[in-house]
Image (tube, rainbow, N blue to C red; front, side, top):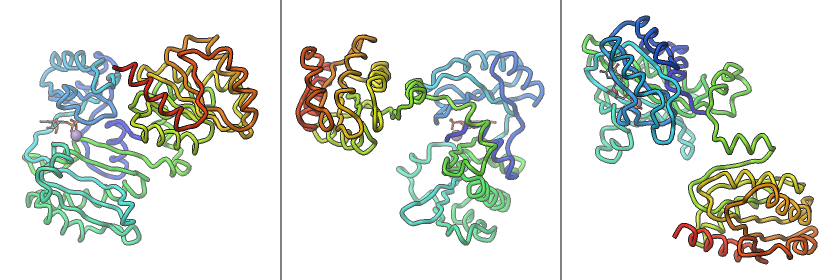
Length: 383
Ligand code: GDP
Ligand code: MN
């Protein structure tokens, strides 16, 4: 689960990491009140779970209340890479002498925690990695040993942080490591970590991803879950007991069982297509579940064709076929549907569909042929 910047900063603060004083605001009036409270000048910051807010006009300095009002007005409702801003974080502005980068993530391949530290922060770390890889100091940390301040001191020297920043940065990094491990993060990133002209080091941004596997020992995460903005289709699917995963392609996929859903995804890729999503209707799906699945997929504007791949076991194919007909009656399905139906009661299922087959309701006898047909229809639609 990703946190908003303000939540990440609150999380940091629990572990003693220095952040600027600030508050959230959902309206222009609230923004003004927070700004008066924390003291001018302030930064008005869009709270969206996507990077590059600064470049997109979502981070603005305000030196007086009029500017706070103007910036709050322009940033609330702003669309940043598909994320509409509903909440602002207003904090007391910092003077910046230097911008650094610091993060911890898991290095799965090497079974260690990985720290990344750079004196060239403030820009995307991917850009630094590309253009100037030597500017990043990597530190592999054995989870059993952990990170002590002596190691952190060597690390900040290796990363070439300014002398005046080193001791504070080393101490902060140890705290960030504790936040990352004890706080059960998948990622704890500060970009930029700043040095102020008067020699203080603190976090100006926060990117925190929590490890959901640890949620059982963090009842306090409930408040973060409450502010999660869910994809409307994911929400709709969840309400109907379906597992929906949104992707970027054009073929909508419905299958029974996660394994079959994923192999269907692979076959679609194999024949040159790409999935817009996949929906696992699970075992024992009946007509109603199938109809719901088609309705969910139908609301996705990326979908140009729908591939239904059912291998009946507990799921009865005749029930599924009935569900397809029900869906067609209930809603206007905008994309052509290609079905591959096999397994329990497959013959009965195909017979149910037979009289209704058309250019937009097609059956194929193998998974490969069905995938080919669905991909061809999708590319014809987008051509
Ligand atoms: P991001 O673009 O989504 O990563 O948002 P950040 O929180 O990292 O802010 C982007 C940039 O805005 C930073 O790299 C800083 O250069 C600038 N910025 C943010 N807060 C302040 C501040 O308090 N004072 C000043 N002078 N600049 C700030
Ligand atoms: Mn940032």
